Amino acid sequence: MNRAFQYAFATLPALAVLGLFAYFSNWIPQTRWEPPQKRQISEQMTPIELAKIGEVLARERGCMLCHTLEPGVGVKGLGRGPNFFQLALRRKEGVPGGPNDLISYLVQALYEPGAYVVENYPNIMPPSWAPPAKLTYEELTAVIAYLQSLGGTPSVRVGQIPKPPTGASPFTPSTPKPPAGLSPEEIAEAQKLLEKYGCMACHSLGGQGGQLGPALDRPGISEEAKELGLSLEEYLRQSILNPGAYVVEGFSDVMPKDLGKKMTAEEFELLVRYLASLGGGHK
Image (cartoon, rainbow, N blue to C red; front, side, top):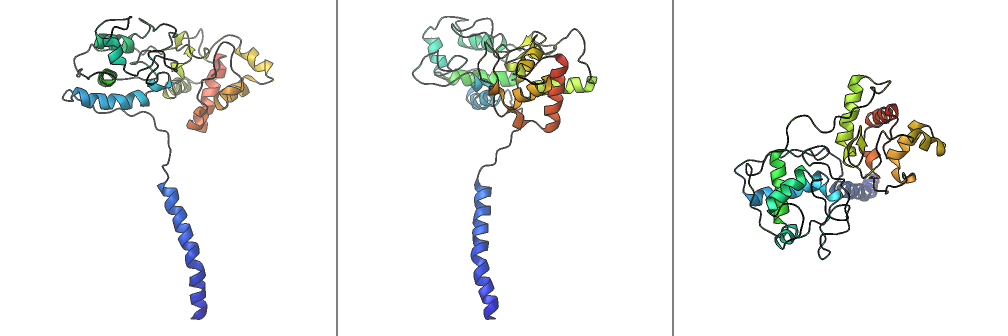
């Protein structure tokens, strides 16, 4: 009996410690990347309700990768795009450029961002209804309501703004010949991966896409790899897993460092094969 008590007395503290660690590990927030989810937005929602959804969408769909919310620094800000802080108030006070009406200005900025570009900023923003954001009409309305709320009172409702262009997605890259060594299904899947992971927000392919990063099918990428003593496939893998290791001349080191961690092994290798078949690179 005494021996059993001794075993129990020695075991219970260990179990208590293990239980504490188990509780603590479950208490820590677990991080897992998920593709952006579409939200139910109805015509009955008030502008304030839309603005709350729009704030979430602006962060989920990548707006804040380039834009910032910085008090006291004006339109310039410190981001790759203009500062969102007090946007509605600044427009009301007469900031020049684009339509005078705030809603019309925001519609133009989201639908045709190249129509008016704030001074000293490059024309790199893709239309918000196109990849990578791919906002629906209702989601675009919610984002406009959110932008109205930054220094003003949201007033827009679903049905009050024009709908974005219809038809094929602007991301339909065309090449002189189909990529070699890949089936049509693999090509289609690889192009979906470029949209899924937001590559086309910064890079272009077939002359379409962003300009913040170098074109994925730019000439001379094989020579870039050779100069580093790498094969093209090795160079592409490094460019995804460790994009800061080599930065193409004329561009900044702004590519996310965790992109490779978000992909499955199958997605990673398919993307490398696709880009290598084009002679382009993901940098």
